[in-house]
Length: 163
Image (cartoon, rainbow, N blue to C red; front, side):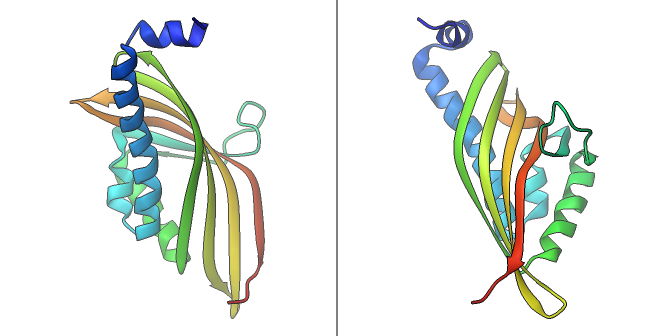
């Protein structure tokens, strides 16, 4: 048994962890779905009431945050502003590693490729972002929520797009 398995099994039986892990992954996916559908209030609802997003460009252990957004009200306002900038978005979530840190807490790293179409100075622009989410999750009243999300922009590509 690996150290990771032993740690996980100290909090959950394997069949329990499979269900908990899927519930956490559903939170990650719901965030992306709500962004794509233009639902900022629902997007903010995947966070704990005092949850926060801390944005970084590049390595979060080596760089200062670009911005910190705290609480559902501020998150909703920020998401609304972002959604308004784009004609359409598509968030594609990739691999995730999620590990329990307690019976009501977990950490995870998830990869996302976010594509945004917008118009700038009369040109159609495709903005593509390679993002990593470094998340702390908390289970409250039976539901998993994001307590803190360190959102890391690994790279960004902006170019003129032709339909």
